[in-house]
Amino acid sequence: MEQYAYIMAGAGAAGLSLTYHLIRAGLADRPILLIDQSPKVANDRTWCFWEARNGLGDALYAPILFRRWQRVHFYSPYFSQTLDLSPYEYKMIQGADFYRLMDQTLSQWPNIVRRYGRVERIEDRPNEAVVHVDGAAYRGAWVFNSIPTPIAGLGSPETPQEGYHRLLQHFAGWVVATPHPKFDPSAATLMDFRIDQHGECRFCYVLPFDHRRALVEFTVFSPRLLPRDVYDHEIKKYLSDFLHIVEYQIEHVEFGVIPMTDAPFETFPGRRIVNIGTAGGCAKPSTGYTFLRIQHQAQQITNALKRTGRPHYRASPFQRRFGLYDSVLLNILEKRRYPAPRVFGDLFARNPAPRVLSFLDETSNILDELGVLLSTHYPPFIAATFDVTLGRLWQQVRR
Image (cartoon, rainbow, N blue to C red; front, side, top):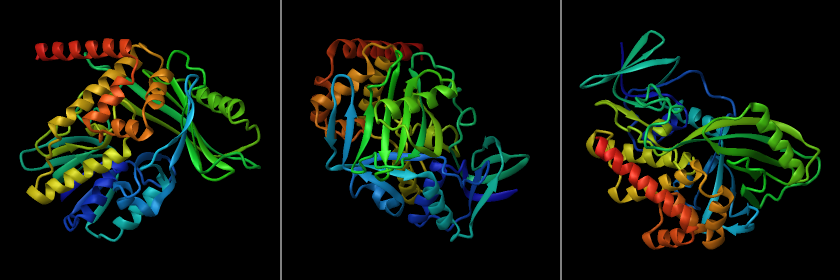
């Protein structure tokens, strides 16, 4: 049975990012195994995030930052404006570029091994964990798992947990090329709520590459997916009705689903197992943004390993307030207490964009948070806060 210091069960964004952090921290001189179902070569993902110009994303991935924007458009029936994000930038990384960088980096380390197959189960032991893959077994001092449930030790994301909220962020996107200039590459469209909502939270966004090419995505926050042809229909309709584009070629298509839930994710489900990425709760419950949170988690794990030899880290108890904010927003969206275009429209209409972004990425201070909270429409937020608080008290009683 092969023995490793670290095993990545799943070699997507989380597993590859953690390995990359280990290399940069000087911890990759030990045997490392990455396991995934198949090699990643397709441009199957687009990751976006906002941060300051010289933030962690720049420090780690500056060579592959495909685009960055200092301004974004926001549209709703109630408020529309071009927003200045300074000191933030909205940044984009393409999946193919990320995988290529990882392949180039990992290939320089002969002690980093890659295996392909289906992870059947992870066995936790006192001093090691064993990953079973298509009948073979691999032993690791630590196993970092990014594979979704049930391997992650959680209930199915399709099964709501009592007392918690569960939505899915599902989206389809087309990279379109037009024969004539149709896009403004100096500004992205962050959210466009002018499309029909159908009682849900629906919006489109546009990430322009240049004057003739852009990624156009249709996104929904709801409990279940739509028929696949609906996504295509909505993108076509948005291109025609709002961007006034009828002539175009589709160069690339992508589709994704991200869990949006305040249900607890078990980061340390075993003595030698650590859940990372979405399986470890890195998807922001109220927005679905994940990539930069993966980088921060990988940094925390790496720092803990350097400091103690163990990957265990603790989030500041003071950060727990953001969990309450997430639950309140999810409660409003899930129970349809207030239309989503008004929720987000109020936030951007009554606050500077940097304040909203710092609030959403959990870097805001109490004064900024107070400004955001006072800008909301009180009745639905008070009702949601009461509902969430009562639910949490009930959970405590049941324990």
